[in-house]
Image 1: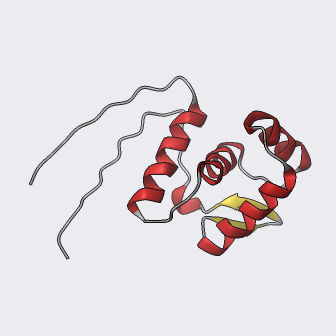
Image 2: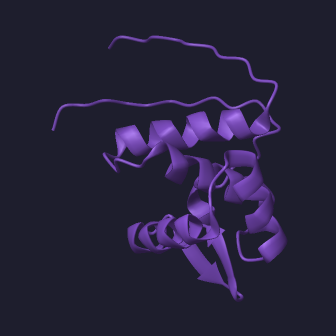
Amino acid sequence: MIVQKLKKEFNDEYKKAELYYSILSVVNNLKLTDREIQLVAYTSIKGNITYANVREEFCKKYETSSPTINNIISKLKKLGIFIKKDGKVKVNPLIVLDFNKELLLQINLTDE
C-alpha cells in the first residue's frame, strides 16, 4: 500500500467546500461543471437554495442568473445530490459537512 498525504489550507469555507465537492465529482465520475460544484458548495453551507434572497446572493457571488440555477437544480436532483425536504431544496445530507472545521479525507483506490 502506498500512502500519500497532501495538505491545503483555506481562509474561505466556500473554497474548501468547492474543493471537497470537486473531489467527490472526480472520484465518482459525476462530471460536474464548475458552476454546479459552486452551487452544491454554496447550498451545503447555506442549508438550502429555496429562498429568493439566497438565490440572489448566489447569483451576485458567482455572476450567474436564476434560470441557470433552476437548470442546475434539476440536474442535481436527478443525480441525487440535491433533495427536496420539507419544501426546501437541500444538498443530500450524506455529503454535507461542516466546512468551518478541519477536514481529513481518505480515498482508497483498490483493485476490483
